[in-house]
Image (cartoon, rainbow, N blue to C red; front, side):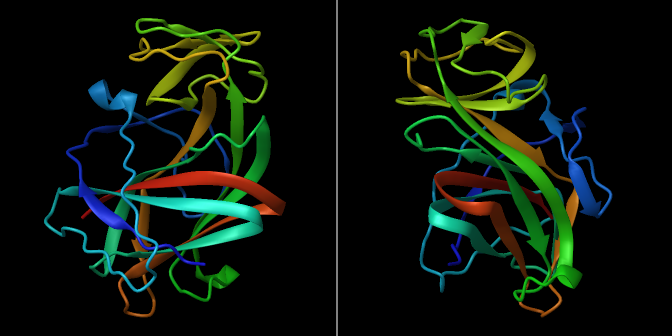
Length: 243
């Protein structure tokens, strides 16, 4: 089932290349991006529409950045599709983030395939970009308070240095991992909020610098997130596009 998106203007800018690599084919892109300055903390946009007939208008002025967000609810599903109306023939995907944003009831790990297509039939020959990406969720093993620069989690084995993580329940924030020792994550910037034991910690997979276009003239791009087997998990997909 496709999910429509709503535009939220967001004055982000100044992307830097990160270091981690992923299995990528089609376009030659660096799939790991770090955002400089205050943007390192990340921005979550939770405005979504589920009406598949709803359109999306993206501001097309040169240099303007628009941020989009979609909710992907897997309930015994192997894949979910998102149709994104670009509003113009092509846009640069400056940055996308895919992450668990609802506690799945326990630890979660699987490898998802994130694919952008230029045609709604979603055939292999219409792939713009494809990456195999890890989806990770664990919980805090110790409480966190504002100013903390480390997080102790139940299982850090699926995280790697420079991962962006999404910490949530009841509040939320993004932080980037500087280093990992055992189950302790050292952060590049201090925590802003307090969290109790059991709060969620998920990785936020980042890909970007991908040109999006549509072969049908409908001015859309077509996204699919797929798992190798049926899963029950709720994901957020944030897209930052630049005209």
